[in-house]
Length: 287
Image 1 (spheres, rainbow, N blue to C red):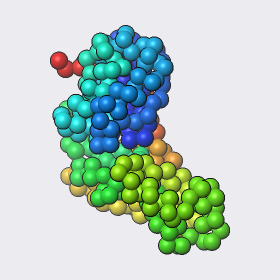
Image 2 (image 1 turned 180 degrees about the horizontal axis):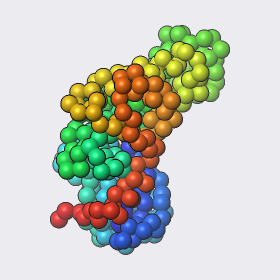
Image 3 (image 1 turned 120 degrees about the vertical axis):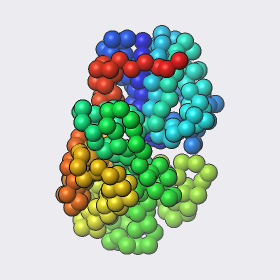
Image 4 (image 1 turned 60 degrees about the horizontal axis):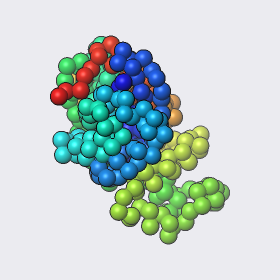
């Protein structure tokens, strides 16, 4: 049996497959990011998942693609933690950029972008991945992501740039105030997820020019800083994965038109594309 997982910082979509690539069971767990979670945390959480308790020992190969899994030292933290749930498996841990490239692959070179809690992008020609100028996290980067949009929603609240009725709605809906925001934003971990949780407020009010422009500017900055530096960006499709790309697709379309870029696929959850890719190419964990 095979366990195929694509993880952001917040949540992870995963599927158990037969060795022929047929789906057995699909699940969702919390996300694991080695910048925030060590092997002990991963091990403790993975053995809480009922489906993994049931099927984990039968799994022979694990493919885990995750946010922050960008170096051997970071990847081994996740792999060692996963071993607790999959004691008999060979485990491969790789960057979520590879999962996104595989999931959107249509046989032609393209730029694939992640717009979820964070943001990232890669150029993939079917042979090699070329990472972009990205992956700097929510403090320095993550343009156009949920954490980026949520941060600007919070700023608009703190600086009273919203209409008074929206300020009241924001406080009542989230049960929040300035003191709570300070505590969460400057906590040792989790600030990116906390900020990202406010992106739906922008989506709810996207019909208002203030919030539309907020999101448009985030996507414009993402394209300028992360996508356009690729030499072939204006000649190949630009595909996207992630909840932000999915939910804000109309604004994303406008930004692609603004830059005269070719739109590729937009996929909310890459795991479906990963299943198709696995079935076509029968990838193996490298010993």
